[in-house]
Length: 332
Image 1: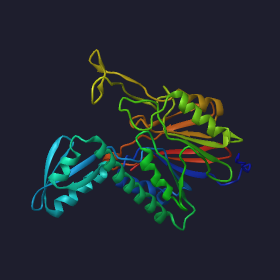
Image 2 (image 1 turned 90 degrees about the horizontal axis):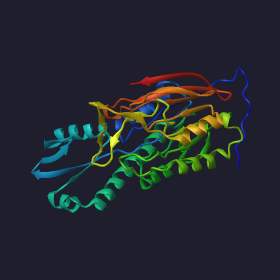
Image 3 (image 1 turned 90 degrees about the vertical axis):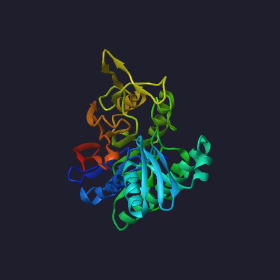
Image 4 (image 1 turned 180 degrees about the vertical axis):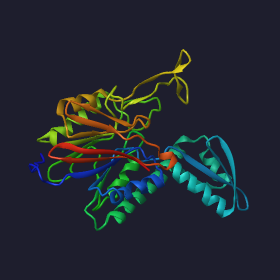
């Protein structure tokens, strides 16, 4: 059923949104995202996809209180609880998951991708459930809601943790939901195909179909905020290294001694911004392409991501009457 909005008056108070994306499992970065509600005095927190971390690190018992692990190409020997807590804190910042195990259990995973994938989903879902609960706790008693969705790196199984949402958390994946009395939020978490073959990649045609199915239920798209994980194609919000997918892992393409860059966004997203002229386009996916651009009257943004350093890259957008009346990139 279509959603109907109230017309704004010139003196009505703007709605302030804080937007971030591509946290990839990083515990301190997510906590900063929740704290942004109070720090920046916003009315809503909007997340643009890629909640899950990228790696699972086995921590294998050696002898006594000694453990061994391999992280970022280096072997680590961990002695006792103090060193273990320090190592785990580093993994939390990087967004990685870990499992302590004895050598026998480790051998059940070694070379068995199905077992690894199963454990990965269990640990990732457990962390996301904790994040949902933390958001409900932190935002209780406030008017602020946090809108969460997946991106191309998130599995459907892990995203079922968003079903734990109750009062302050809104699971907005592939939905149109209310932001305020004037505006709605339309969310699509898919990306176009990547060299990494991530779980939720879709063709341009499929992304376009999902967008059209959402927008048909919006009476006035000019009063909608498009929260599309994939940025518009060749928009400067999607510029990244071109990778050679014929090798694994993919490596940068070099021509005349220089790396090749290209636009890795979506034409379907570009078409939707140009056609519907929404209030704003909020995008992510390409971590290094922080910036803004315009499609007609519509501003589009990518705040970028430095989650692995525990840095929250974000964007404050103030909207009123179907227009952006203020914006500010943040980092901290």
